[in-house]
Amino acid sequence: MSRASSSQHTTSAGAGHSRWVRVTHWIVAASVLTLAVSGFTILMAHPRLYWGAVGNDLTPALLELPVSRNYRHGGWAVATQSFPDGGSAVSAVRTYGILNQDGWARSLHFLAAWFLVVTGAAYLLAGILTGHLRRDLVPRTGELTRQRLWNDLTSRLQRKIRAAAGGPPYGLVQKCTYCAVVFLGLPLMVITGMGMSPAITAAYPWLCGMFGGSQSARTIHFCVFALLLLFMVVHVVMVATSGFGRQMRAMTFGMPT
Amino acid sequence: MNSAGVITSRRTLITGLASAGGLLLAGCSETEPPTYGKVLRMGDLLTYRAQRLLLPTRSLAKEYSRSDITSIPAIGTTDPADPRQWAYNERNGALYQRLRSAQFAGWRLRVEGSVARPGSYALSDLQHFPARTQITKHTCEEGWSAIAEWTGVPLRTVLEAAGIRPSARFVSFYAFDDAAESIDMLDALHPQTILAYGMNGGDLPIAHGAPLRLRVERQLGYKSLKFLHRIVVTDRFEDLGKLSEPRNGWAWYVGI
Image (tube, rainbow over all chains, first blue to last red; front, top):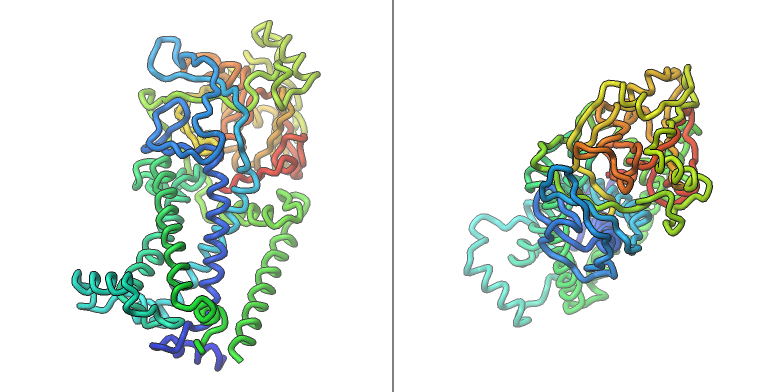
């Protein structure tokens, strides 16, 4: 108990990451990595993205990704009219044996999603209760100006300032980025994920309606994934350039040395 | 000091997760969908339980208008009589070939298992039941989707005609290829779960499962088995043919 209550105070400036931040950070990190690998495996089965409610190989794509041998495979028999009385809808038989590893990938995806959702919810709750979000992540009143943002960004790019040594206080760009990931990116991944579910959208149609349809939700799901991937790359580069071992120890064992 | 604390909390966490998993497995009697002792199946079971607990059971999948109907690919088995198809079954394939050449006049759907009146139904018998037509979205597990109009008899109507025993928990479906599927009673009795013999105003085409296919609108496409010939109502969860999900590695409850 004393350990738990003292950890609430260790979030104050310069004292490193508190224990619950470290634990949730690594569970979320492992979940996101698993989701990325399994999600990409799912994407490879059908590397076409659409906008709207529906889309398939016989309708126009918004974006085709050359990420598996299924890309523009062209293995379709001659299409037949769907209606005896005409109309533009057709049906065609697929003659190509596609690459499809969706069985284990989807089950793994949802298993990892459970870890992300439960841990993410616990993080947000603890973040609110301990004041971590308000104190360390959300920019302070008056702090968020275009000039300060620009200064922080350029000085960071010119390596004039070092990244924080294992925990808060964070720089302005750092705060904004973490806020975007915590409050926007990851929640959007969960919501667009559910917006693709026939079971969940039957109960709550607005979940895919708010994105313009479940194929739009799928496209947004992919785009936000790409942004999160970019974040992870930059995040790891920043960690590496500011002392990889020191930062890893701080996020794993606590107090910076 | 602190590192020891982390290891302790991590141990606690792992122990906690393991016991949560144990609870899930312990609650998994023989009448429940199996977990197969694998971590992935445990996640599927958690999703199944959570959705059954949290989602309203009577919700309907969105239905569209005729102008929304789109093109639709035909994948998987598209002709059970074709020996080159990967789910080909020699005996059933030959039978399918004979039935098809007679426009399925000799085809019958057997309904058996935990029902008071096991029997079989010709296509015309099924068409004499009150029909349901629904324009719905087919969501393929691969990632694509399509809207089509399906006409058929609600599964509930057929099951009630056969007399569902109170002990019944699951309904299994067997197809002319080697595929088999099962759904729980909640999905089986859902008003949009139909045995479809018509598509887009015409007969159900061969490539889409003629003469009869299942439509389970609140699950992914692979649950909507094509080319049906037999329905078995069961009291317990059964591991079906070699192409049913438990054997081929796909989730029984798709979890999406």
